Amino acid sequence: MSSDNDPAELTIEDGRIVLKGRLDAKNAAAIWSRALKAAEKGSTLDASGVTYCDSSGAALFYELQKQRGAKIEGLPEDARGLLKPYADADFPKLGGGKEKHEPAATSIGRVAVAMAGDMREQLVFTGQATVALLHGLVNPRIVRWGDMWRTFETAGVNALVIVGMIGFLTGMIMAFQSTVPLQQFGVDIFVVNLVSLAMLRELGGIMTAIVLAGRSGSAFAAEIGTMKVNEEVNALTTMGLDPVRFLVVPKLMAAILVTPLLTIYANVIGIMGGLMVVMLFNHPWAAIYNQLVSAVTLHDIATGLIKSFFFGALVGGIGCLRGLQTKSGASAVGDSTTRAVVSGIFLIIAVDAIFAVVFWAIGF
Image 1 (tube, rainbow, N blue to C red):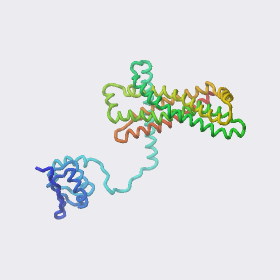
Image 2: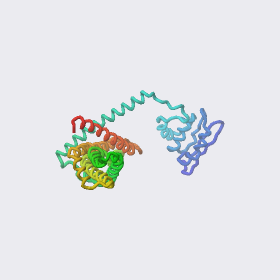
Image 3: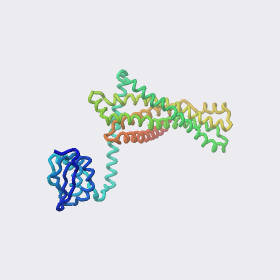
Image 4: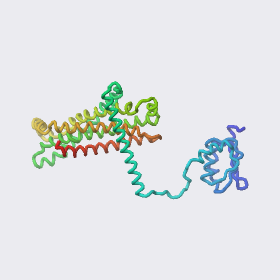
């Protein structure tokens, strides 16, 4: 019977490496370097004197056998059982050959297949989320309104400061950059038109959506991704609960509601920032107000608000989808969060471009 303090011994007898004693984590680490130095390709390792072996000792045997090419004799039965998972695993050999590079066509095809699969998952998720959202609107009692209002607060109310700052600074920057060139023609009062129309039709909604994609979409992906890693999503499915209806619908509804409200807020703050700059160039408030009223129409306001509903759906949907796509592993949640932000911003820009073409085609 071996003692917990029984040390491991390594000796070389007639060209054979002899291991004796207890091979636990402490003792295996103590003789690891000596054993690797002593082992050569084709050398013989006598392990008949090993009295105890745990996974650390099995790892040492694997290193000597597979990586160094040593032949092990007299290995105890319990050590063989521990060594079997190492033998079945496909570990790369140390000092292997050059890494093989696949052809460019293969890499392009692999990326194309991955993108096609991701697009298919997005289409399937869009259908599931749309059906669940409509079902929730028809049957309000099944919607988790408490979760929806909490998401509305964290995604909307808590984002007022950052959205307001970005909108205000954007309006000021546009006004400063456009006032000087327009002054050369004596029409710098039209800065009011430029700032107001740019904020209402484009910048207010798209900047708000991008901020929400980086702030709230990533939070949705991280929250659901953590639940996926912890098997909580699988637990919901086991209990007969639809994860899309239970987790996605409240967040999606909150994002769709909060994005237009934040867009209106960003528009107002951005226009105020631009008007403040115009006032600095000695334009009376009455002239600025009249120019603003004559430049802005309900058509311009509606253009930005219509897009903001779709932007909100994109932010909430992509964030939840990336969370549900989270795989296992320590870095899985971080990968899902990154994918949610990147794909969310890309789709926001792409949808805005589509709206620009459609509005131009229909004369809206």
